Image 1 (cartoon, helix red, strand yellow):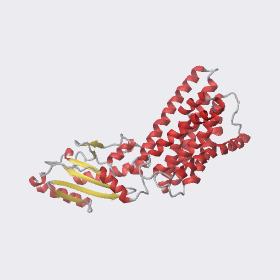
Image 2: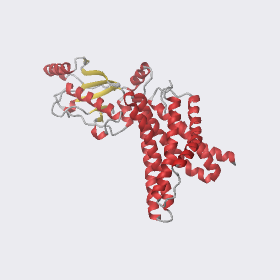
Image 3: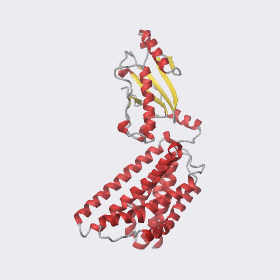
Image 4: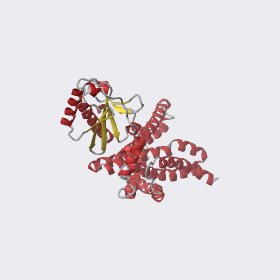
Length: 394
């Protein structure tokens, strides 16, 4: 019976870890290092007991002041959220911050979740052995996934700290206080709901509904972060030839019809003058009746932007298409379907709808395309929100 209970206790963690492990696209992490992360997470459970004992000497972590909200707050944050998340962070930092295998942004989430679920698994075994199989199902749907999602939040900002060294302190702080706040709110809603059940059942039900809503919020945000970090755009440390090979396999040829410039050569000449005036390094390719203007740029990432002129170009907004050839725009859209200015052409290929309404030219299309890449990088690095993702010259 004990063996069955232990299997039931461990199974939720195993399933979640397998899911995340499969999300790695290029370089799967060494199993030995992942096992260390899991063991350190379990070890942090013991460390938490010591930390809570010390905290309890200073601040009673289960006060009985008669104020249910205050009592629940103290227990939630000082008895659980702060010591647990701090110790998980310490284990994570000591294990991988300077480790050569921490080479991709998604690695932060992988290792953080392994640490978190090491903690959750040992905690779950103790709970299930004490309370039986009926507790296992409840915790499999609540506590264990919650620890995993808190690990996602920690690893998400931990990776930002690693790969954006100029903002290291800011994101390291977030990788601590964001999970602490989320964990604290999670426990606070549970503990408060239990305390108010007899004296104020209606309020208790309201707290229970709030708890369910908060759990849904954790799931939604967690999967958004996983989706965002697992996109190819975020991989660093991968050999350039492998990235280019991958990109080439996923970049479709944009064959659009031709020969308007034979009818109006003076228009092509004016366009070339405008483009070279703003972008001397631009590459204008006129071949087989198709005109493509390409421009490479490197900021935090390497971009390749291409503007294609449609048939019978008459300086109309709908006759210019701006494409992102590198990185793959469809991969970027996998991060969020709400990224502004992105549409699909008739062939189902994503392009940027950034051509100005009143100043239609290839040069302006390129300029706005560059502005889009800069805004995208700011949004990725959380310097702006989506509602601030606005191109000025539109």
